[in-house]
Length: 315
Ligand SMILES: Nc1nc2c(ncn2[C@@H]2O[C@H](COP(=O)(O)OP(=O)(O)OP(=O)(O)O)[C@@H](O)[C@H]2O)c(=O)[nH]1
Ligand SMILES: [Mg+2]
Image 1 (cartoon, rainbow, N blue to C red):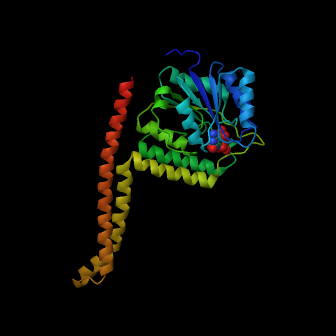
Image 2: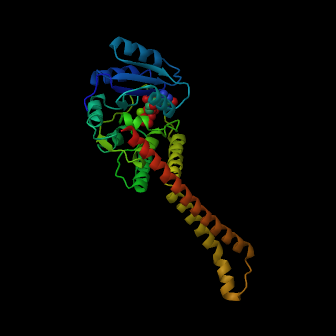
């Protein structure tokens, strides 16, 4: 596919990034002079919006600053996906951590029609481990990758990278329902679930420059990400999710039933009546969960069919 000159859009979500935003715009303009650059500013309290607009103007770069009032990276990207029309989208952090000189490598497979989403993988080359100063983040990244690969039978290496290229088909058929940093997980699971072609390219990664502050809180955002995965699994893999809940309940029921069985074997009479009731209740709850899982699985299957037909109708 050969692209008309203005069909690449660089999406930069930015919140209080006055230290780095101008540098990021310059670097991506140098790497992709034909691209339009959109900075989605979320109520930054510093000079981010002004600096971004001035830099775009002084470079004569296409694109603009889009102000978004609803706070959160997910909200910002959602706004960009609604508002920006392009053939290829490149999403990247505005904090100078991802290499602009790899931009062409990331979008080329999308232009060539070989991938729907190309991810700049920070983890394989060991750059993230070396550069990132917060060990819990490395642990969190590893945990999330393992969980996702287990559930989806995939072999992804970096599921939380903020450096990604997307095709138009992917972007315009992706409903962004998350508000914050769950975005990367959500977009990855969406791609896996809908069988979009994902390509990971190892990229260099450097830590934020001095004076620039992370917007990520290790504990609250970490908890949010884990919660988001459970939530998304509930939607995408309802049978697996509810079977796990059902098994847990049934297992507890069995444990509660041990003294009851004992009574029956020894005395042919049940003395632990409350435990017997509890055990029966837990088994019933388990069976209920299993049927909920089966019903939701059918619904998920139907929704996948509808989605697939929508894609077919567009092609
Ligand atoms: N528009 C918008 N952008 C945001 C918001 N929160 C963070 N961002 C941007 O999203 C990008 C990623 O945020 P970071 O704080 O770098 O998070 P991270 O890359 O996961 O973590 P670090 O390891 O600290 O770099 C940056 O460009 C932020 O400016 C927000 O509420 N709104
Ligand atoms: Mg960052």
